Image (cartoon, rainbow, N blue to C red; front, side, top):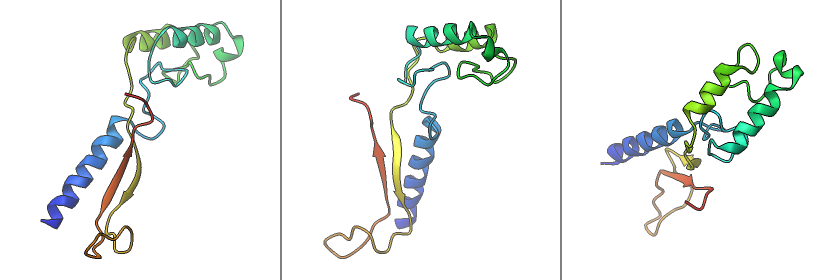
Amino acid sequence: MLQSVKIVLYVLMVAVSLGGSAGANYPVGDLNEDRRVDLEDLQVLAGQWLDESCLILDCEADLDGANGINTVDFALLAENWGGKGTALVMSEFMASNSKTLLDENDDSSDWIEIYNPTDA
């Protein structure tokens, strides 16, 4: 039984992390990191597209990471237009716990903490 609980916790941990890896809870094209691809992101892309230094340097709006900011980056932003990223963040994970958060029987459980930084 305990082994099956550990497996369920591990699967949950993997699912949360794949839903948005650390620092990547944002859809491609979310340039202002508000977890949405919208007009504000288009404004960032347009501003950097017109910036001559972004033709050479690695700029935030170079979404494909190749050849500076161009129509490919615009297409990636457009593909995710209106998309929303995952809001859940796995903030703590404890496996093989033997000392932390003892219950009323002085047993310690493995645990996972999932944090939702939004109001949704």
